[in-house]
Length: 592
Image 1: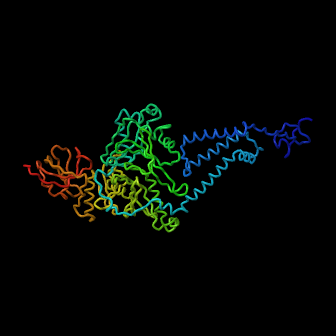
Image 2 (image 1 turned 60 degrees about the vertical axis):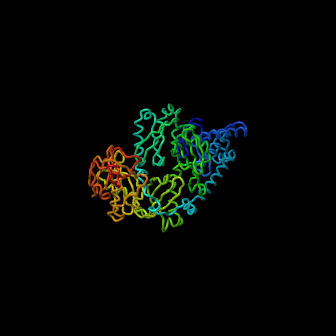
Image 3 (image 1 turned 30 degrees about the horizontal axis):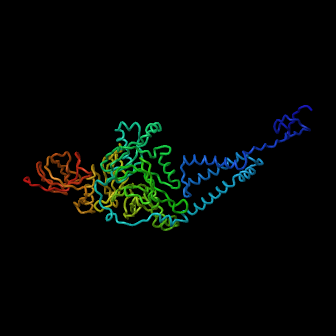
C-alpha cells in the first residue's frame, strides 16, 4: 500500500507525523514494552547492612561538620534524625532495585515496605515535635514563662554604693577593640600572623574592670604555619586607664574558636559532651591569668523548646583543652548568663506576670526592657544593667534592673526618668560643636542621685570627655575633660538645683590618699563659675585641683608652702602628667 498523508482533526499530521503504516486511515499504535525491573543488590540482609552503613557514614560526617546536640530539647537534633531517615530510605530504594508498578503510588507503597522502621521513626519524631511545641506554647504556659526570672525590688541609692574612680569602666566594646588593634599593630612579630578576636568579654580581673579577648589566626595558611605553637597571647584592655596589654603565654592556646578539626572549641565540646546544649562560649582569665573558655550549658525548662535557661558551665582550659562541668562555677568566673537570656527572661516576666490575655488586651503593668545594656562591677562580680519601660510607651523609663551575670540574682530599682537614648541625646547636644558620640549609659549612684554616666568619643573612636546626666531630670547635664572634673561639675549642678547640699563631697573611698610636700607652682582658672587652683608639687609633673568653692583655704597657697594634702586617684598611682582632684590640705611646720 503506498504511503499517504491525511489531513483533518483525526489525521496523522494533525496529531503529529507518524511514519508507521496506516490501515483504513487509522494508525496502528506501537506496542509498549514492559519496563524491565532493576535487579536488587544481594539478599535482604546484605541490603539492610549496606543501607545502615551508608546511613552511618553520612551521620558521622554530618555530626562532625554540623555538631548537633543529641538532645530531644535541641531543634537541630530533629533535623539530624530526619536526614538519617531520609538517607536510609534513599539507599533502600537504590539497593532494592526500584521495584514497583511505575506509578507514584506504587513507588510509595514499595518504599514504605522497604523502609518501615525509618518511616515509623520519622512519624514518632513528628508526634514528639508537635506535642513538645504545644507544651512550650506561651499561650498555654504564660505563667511558667513569667517565673523564669525571680525579681526582687530594691532601693538604688541605699543598696548601690557610690563607686570609686578606679571601678568605673570608661570604654565600650568598640573603643576597647580599637585600642587592642593598635596595640597588636605595635608588635611586629605578631601583627603579620595574627588578628584579634572581636568578641571582648568584660570581667573583673584582680579587682579592676577589664575587657579580654583571644587572638586568632590571620588566615588558613597562617594557621598551618603557626598551629603547632598555638595562639601565643591574649589582650587585656583596662577599662579605667584605657591601657591595652598583650599578655604573652609560655605555652600557646591550642583550643579556641579559631582552631580547626579536633582542636576547634565547638567540636571539642561536642565530642566530650554530646548531649549538652551550649550558649556561645566566652573568653575569660582566672586571677592567675590562665586563659579559659566559659561555655554555659543551655537547658529548656518549659515543654521541649521553651524556657531557655542556664544550668552551670563547662570550663575549658584554652592551653591544654582540659574541661570540667561545674553546676556551681568558681567565683573568678564573671559571665555565665548572657545579656540576651536575662533580658528575654525579664521580658517574659514583664509581659506575662498578669497572664497572657492581659499582655494582649488591657496591658496592665506590662513592661519590657529597653533597647540596650551595659555592665558594671559590684563586689567583684559583673552585673548587667538595662532600663525598664512600659510596653505602651518608650519615652521614659519606670526603673532599672541589675542582674548578676554569674548567679542571675536580679533586682528591680524603681526610678522614673529618661530613657538611655534620651540621655545620650542630651549629653551629645551639650557638646554638639565637637560632634562627639556618647557610649551607652552606665547607671551610677552619685550623691544619692541615680545618674547616667557616659564617655564621649571622637571620630577616632577614642574617649575625649565624660558626661553625667541626672535620671529623673535629664535636662541636668554636666561634662568634663576628666572624670573628676565631670563629677565635680555634676555635683555643683545638683547643688544649684537643690538636689543635694551645697559643697557635698564624695565620700573618701579606697582611692583617697594623703601625702605631703612643697608647693612648686600655683595656677588658677575659672570653671563653671568656680575658681580652681592647680598646684604642682616639687618632684611632680602632675597638678592637684583645689576647687575654691569647696576648699576656700586654697586662695592662700603660695610657692614654697609646705602642706599635707588629700587627693583622689582615678587610677592606682599619681599620674606623672595630668590633673587629680584634691579635697583639702593643712600647712606643715617647716621645723618638722
